[in-house]
Every structure is written in C-alpha cells, then in structure tokens.
Image (tube, rainbow, N blue to C red; front, side, top):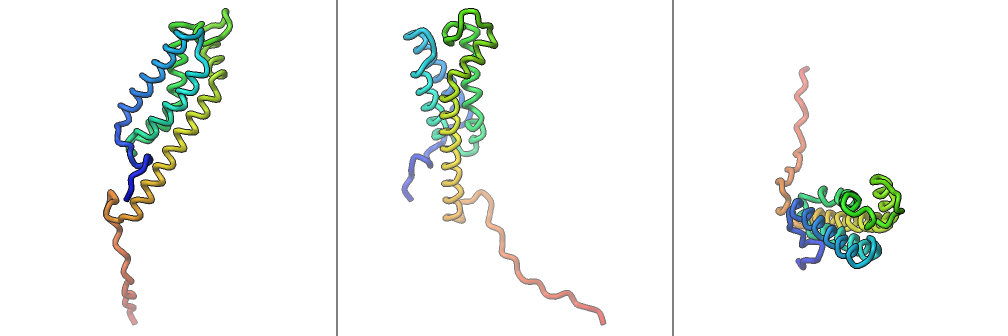
Length: 158
C-alpha cells in the first residue's frame, strides 16, 4: 500500500506541542521586531503551524493537537501582553485583559482557520487509520471477535 501524507505522523504529542509553541513564539517575536505589532505574517504562520502539527502527531496523541490551536493562540497573546503590550496592536491605554481580548478578536480568523485545518487533518487521518484497519484485519490492536455460533435450544421438561 502506498503511504501518503496522512499516514506519516509519528511524533509524540508533547514534542509536537513544544514544537508548535516554539514556532509560534519565534514567528511572533520576529514579526513584532520587523513591524510594530503582530499581523498577517503571524496569522499565516499560525495556520501553517496548526496544520503541520496535526500531520506530525502520532495517532494516540490526537487529543493534544485537537485542543492546541486556541490554547496556543491565547498563550502567545498572553505572553506578549505581559512583555510587550504595544506589540499586540491595541490602544495605548488598554489594560492587560483588554489587550489580550482585543488581540484575540483581531486574530480570530487565523484562529478559526488554524483550528479548522488542524481538526480536518486529524479527522482525515483518523478515517484513514480506521479504513486501513478494516482492510487488514490482522493489524487491529485487539483480536477480531469470534463469530457467534447458533445455540442448541434449551431442553424442555415435560
């Protein structure tokens, strides 16, 4: 059988999550250094990161990547609000919480697209795995159930 991109994910969930955090923070730092705030470059890279980690993760760790995009976005924005509130692109007088909420609103499209792409990749990979297991019965993690044999009728007393 030919292997496709959907069949290749072998990395543990913790490693993939760490990679996603490192990449997202790196992109955010680079873009805020180039421009004055997080913008389109961060949004595009965020969607690609979410898609990439969904393709890299091992099937047993799908949950970690399934909940990652909103937590990743929130984490990056909170760290930026702590360190460089102006880098979020809000108003000058915004407080911490207001800066984070405003930034979430400005990056909502990227968050939605990244989340949708990650969940779509995970769903496709899950369906491919289930389909592959159905085609090769010996590859299932548990042995196939034996077929039920018809029972003899219970004897009746007369």
